[in-house]
Image (cartoon, rainbow, N blue to C red; front, side, top):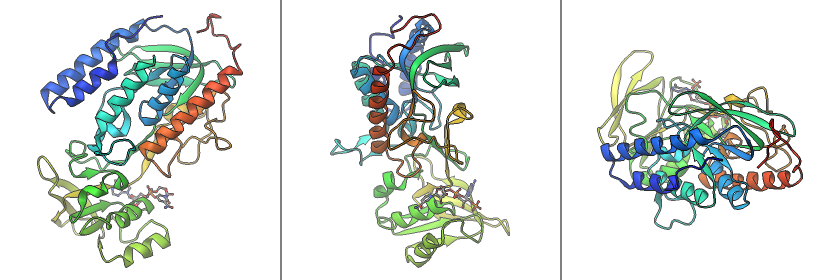
Length: 374
Ligand code: NAP
């Protein structure tokens, strides 16, 4: 069995993320990928005890727990990219995280994820910056997964007795130039996470559904004013949320309006709004823009194999992380569209690891394609 470089990927990630933003950090990140790619090539298609897909708080907590149970988990972390799909998940796109317990002074999102990776690796988890491309899940296992070798693009196959799926969900974005660059610098997709930073400021929320109204109302606890920017003259949200928002003196409405641009270089100073009826453009002074136009779970590779709800969130059973396929467990935002917090994702990642460990104890006899077992 090939091993990943002994240096410890998590430690290197921490060093990379502590480097000043810019070329140095990017060079370190690139060096990190090529180092890990060496390890990827050494992995064969033998039968693993457990493979975890996803490396946000849910995936890495599952990795920590299964590693400490001597299950030598393999984690398919996702590919380096600038979306919520990259290794480390959505917290890689945030700055300060102040509501993760244990960090009295707060911690940067990427640093927190670096710590989680290092902690999982310390106990033997193998982390690969590779994207799972396909899955063949079989009731009772073994399951077959394919991932893309990040250096060659070739598909590699791996077999697992148990699988933990924790690919999370992506916040839908507006698709504006520099929108992702400004995430954590005025642009946010999570009011619970970032609202506190906008105390006394004038900010905006985009969207007309329950999420947008919930965020707008929540943000009035901190902000001086919250302008809800909605593309129509009628809200999609439930009546009760509409009534609350309309009655809140701090919530203003920009009806029939879309955001067409972001103002500010290093951090947000305003948003350009366009009236969709007249085409007229104006600048709204806002130091924060919360994008609340919906989320999509990253469950594409599971479609048709696992039971999901109408929005694609994976369904779990009886208060556990067990899914509709025996031997497949699900955790984090891939399941949860209600709480969506790092700490709740980590909690369900722990549950999935314990569920998988107990399941494996009862299924020791599973054999792989070559009758080999680890
Ligand atoms: P949603 O109901 O799909 O609403 C998305 C909103 O964003 C809509 O108003 C939509 O406008 C707008 N939008 C979509 N794409 C846009 C774009 N590119 N530019 C500008 N605006 C855009 O999503 P959600 O609010 O996240 O809610 C998802 C589900 O969770 C819903 O079933 C909701 O009821 C539920 N939820 C419930 C609660 C609660 O009960 N407390 C809280 C949050 C969410 P249009 O209206 O014009 O389509």
